Length: 375
Image 1 (cartoon, helix red, strand yellow):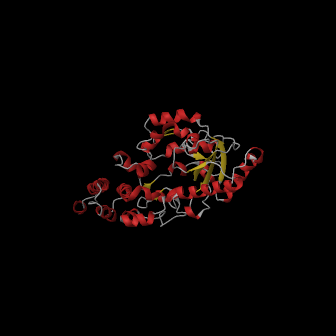
Image 2 (cartoon, one colour):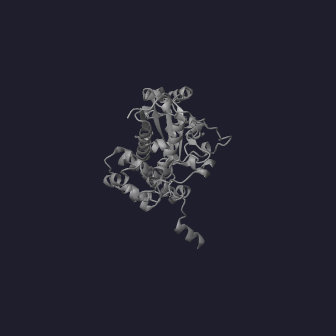
Image 3 (cartoon, helix red, strand yellow):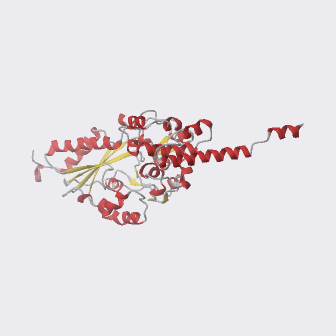
């Protein structure tokens, strides 16, 4: 089936259909824009030159390619950006953060891996377009290639870039995933969204590690999401206490954002909580062997960090928990772990509890002396 061209194809009508098809497939919103991101290049290069990308070497490797979607698909003219709400029906996030012995996992990772969901649905949207017009060129992207998703989504009118660097929508806050369909179709562009952060600095103020060093500027090397997911080595000791009970990602800057009062719950069952991860204790998860981890985390975003990194993160959280015999005994089970990375973080955690216990003992009244004095 050949592509219909010229007067045979009404691109305005096609764009309207694409939005409707997207909604029918489960996307919360669909927007369209051109491929021009030249205005973003200077900011991106400055961020990379500052080293804020940390160990995410792929960011530097791709460089300015991220601002050139047309280089990813020869002849590309348009980008269709789609979003899907992911906030699951789960235990209240703030209450979990207040319970230091309960594991906190970023809400987006409690269900199925969003990469799989987005890619599947974007593929179906591409198929719908093919059914309507015949052959055309396209590529699907979902956080899997050098694409500036937030910048493209802003151009399509899906939202604006918040001071925490995430996309914000007046209708849905920031609790959604983004994915793109880059095509060679000359589709009409939507208008970009206006900004509505105003003088608010809540996300900067709440960040546990002060990783948001200025509005719209994030030092990933200090970000808890980066440290627990992207960073493969030893977590810097000064930052470990600041992680609290966060073992995979961090939602603080989103939880505090006033616009997330309007966030919508996930409609797709894919994003509902698996294996009780919204209520699981640190001790329970630290006891998982590698086979259990791989079995339970298969099909989730967490799977890719692997069991060793999972234990590293949990060891830090256990070190931050109130000292108790069960916590200490849990940590001791991994003292002889084959990984030096795990052993290092377990030792750090145990030393924290040893220090806490010494402090408590030092300040504890001497029962014998108290009796003698009273007598």
